[in-house]
Length: 130
Image (cartoon, rainbow, N blue to C red; front, side, top):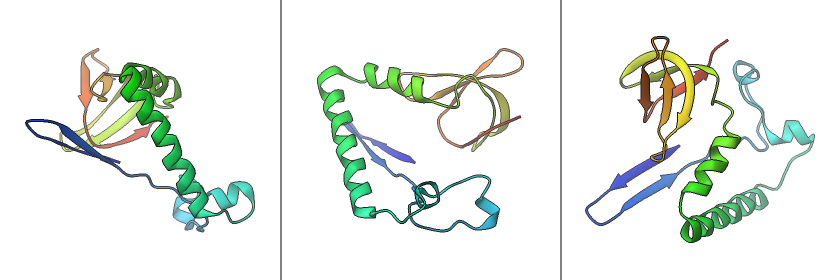
């Protein structure tokens, strides 16, 4: 989850992460989500996980300051499990479907519709279809 604010001099982003660590999931989510406890078979130290995530963000931020955004975008695209897949998008602009085609330099998802027209997704929920 990312919130962006842009002003005359600079922009700021707040990044949020939802991570199931030691919780039990309701049956309605068991086919959609998982907790780390269920993967590792034991409770995990939440403080250590938060520390490790923050350390990794620092590595990425330093890389961004030194090399710019392009190398991070390249890695993001390689790791993105959505690209190349048929998806359904539900956003403030409505509901539509297509193939997740690319991520542009402004971090917008490009979705290719059945007609071949590309749409930019700035916000919304995405579900892989089929």
